[in-house]
Image (cartoon, rainbow, N blue to C red; front, side, top):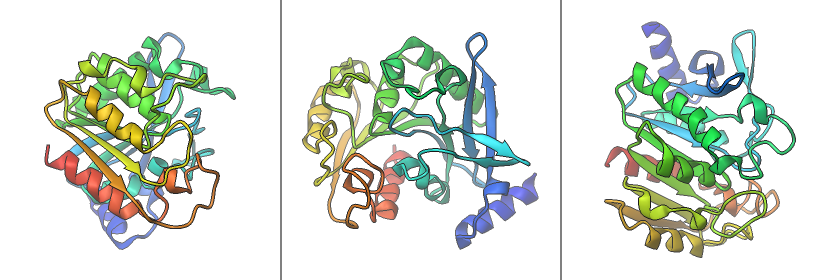
Length: 264
């Protein structure tokens, strides 16, 4: 096991693909008859754990083929495609899929991200990580994934150490609950809010980052980091390969998030 961890770390540093060694597909039994899957990536000496919530309907379609995990959907999502960059910063990474009872077309839309069932599922993930590694737990969401991360920060019974929201859902929408509609005053952990000044997704305007920050009255530390520039969009405004998904700024944004996590 230690040899595998060392080889994994070496491959990550050299940029060589290391899926088979570094990524593990974990399946937990959560609610009755329900399984929660997530990808787990662990560097040799992790300093904190981050639980990543992709946007959209959240159905990544995780599976395993001869022990090598595969992702069927949302490969271009900002957090999904940068997961190994977080590992290079010394963070253990858990990438969340929709639970087994939400693998249909609508996935985690229609209010599931703000539901008690979602909290119960992810609390099992948090407990799994805490039982195996004595590390701080941070929740990181992007786009609709910020609904999950913020809701967990408010309602988790397992306790977390910090929260990061990127391209936050700050406008009311029929498919979920905007972060600005949640009881943000109950969040009492350090929180970083990341946005792109040119984000054109209608439900995640950059000014929403400041609106959220003003509501975090109990958080001991709140920062808003606004990025600009990057590569020209290669997807629709709400897609991952656009300003909304920090295209061309991946390394800079991940380093910024990681520094905030490791310094708090």
